[in-house]
Image 1 (spheres, rainbow, N blue to C red):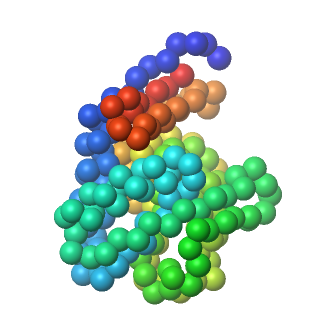
Image 2 (image 1 turned 180 degrees about the horizontal axis):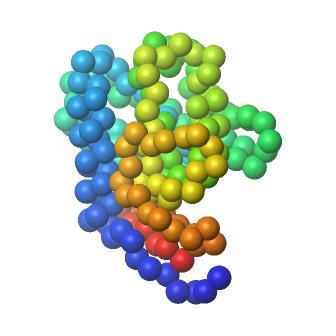
Length: 169
């Protein structure tokens, strides 16, 4: 793989994408009392935190953040939550990750909630690479990219947001 990287999104563009996603979530859930934003560690949680911060300012409903740690390399579903799964019962779940490539991570994310009665489950990714191996679609995405299979999308998020970037390499 070459050392050349192409900047896809700069900090301002990333913030614009996250803002738009937050407003879409608000529009789709304005009648709810509470939604649960489930970030897939590590980068999905960083994006989920930013979405929650915006929703806390603009939405009439409560938004709760939970973190999901998945074993993405195993052949069966193994996960850890920082919140009891029962707290998601009969709520809207917004499952967040940074990049969707094959769809495996989001499919595992769905599996976390299979035994829980939900109002609905929606997915968010910052970058959708369109290389699905699993029947998973995104409900909200920042950008859709048609990439080569051997290319890598690198999402860099910083606490301050000043050096945020999405690179294709």
